[in-house]
Image (cartoon, rainbow, N blue to C red; front, side, top):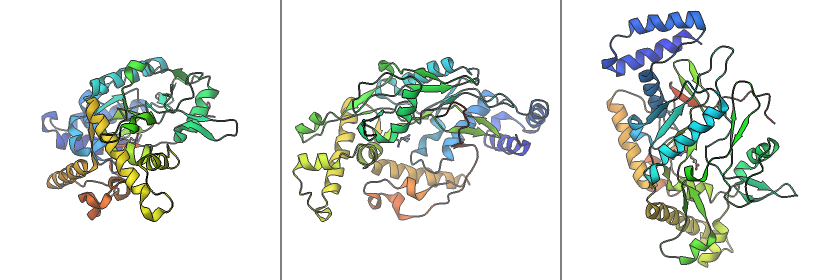
Length: 363
Ligand code: ARG
């Protein structure tokens, strides 16, 4: 714990939050805590501000216009695997809100000297298993999660029917104990079956996706304090599902299937069959989520919102860090305003960061 990080965060918080009063008394208190315990404890207000600013600082996220509206669930007193699993499920229920998705973060116990906080091993709270066949190739599901699925199996997971869309169990590690496997109850998982507005056969493909993307393997860093378990979610932008999860060759690789059903000429790349199939897949995603009453946004709208956000940040005298390669949507990039410019991509703090894992239980 570097006291300089604590000081710089507290100064930012007080500068942006006049109602918090002068920084000096709080600074003295925090420096004393660090001197005595090697760390310090945020107030609830500091935590909420820090979490929102970590979102604001996420250079890869196009959806930051609403950063102030992030709901912060303060569960810092929870440091057991069981407690984390229960509150992750409650997070999903509250964030899903029957489809009116609410950007939400749940913050669990922080790292302290000699006492690391809990961790969720899953990349997201909801992900689909990637099932391996006898040959070691992925025969069903999301190939991205094949290694994690194997880890869950090694830890004793016997669930999943071997289907394309089996939701993985949570794997939670806390207190230096072996990780806990916890099934996410079905009523905490909202999913949308996919259909196409013009092609009745599309529904027969049996495709679906979950409503809430909830990243669970990034640390929330605020003023030198690391919260290793702080799952957060927004809502989906259609292309994440339609142009990546379902389309990437190393994910669900569905373009050949969709192109075939559309009757496209797939004999050469130059017929642009992939491009045509990709558009129809994305039409299906946006249409299906809309019909199901589940919040989703399209890349044109979200790109425009991002530019408003960026301009607003600049008017506030702040840099808005952005990584072009993540901000530009994977479909029709040049049709959106975010394509036609460059960005500063600096690492600001607070931040969400990937920390290398150091579990003795890791396979
Ligand atoms: N791209 C990831 C996925 O498809 C989700 C990342 C976060 N996305 C979001 N809209 N908050 O699952």
